[in-house]
Length: 71
Image 1 (cartoon, rainbow, N blue to C red):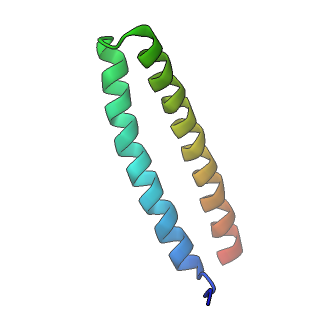
Image 2: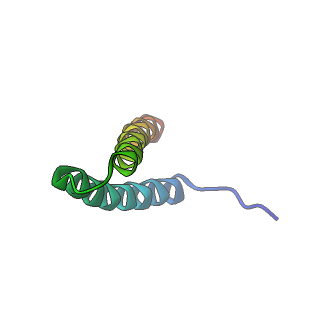
């Protein structure tokens, strides 16, 4: 049986995903700045960084929408 999600559960999930993404971004940025990766790996890491940054912006937009529904 599938239960309904409360807004607080959704907010907690968004917060958790943002924290995990933030930590991964810190590690990726560090690796990319060092420049020790071979070019194909560097390119893959750069794409991953861009994907994570895009996801962080998307999560922030969702959070903003949730704020509007809560008012």
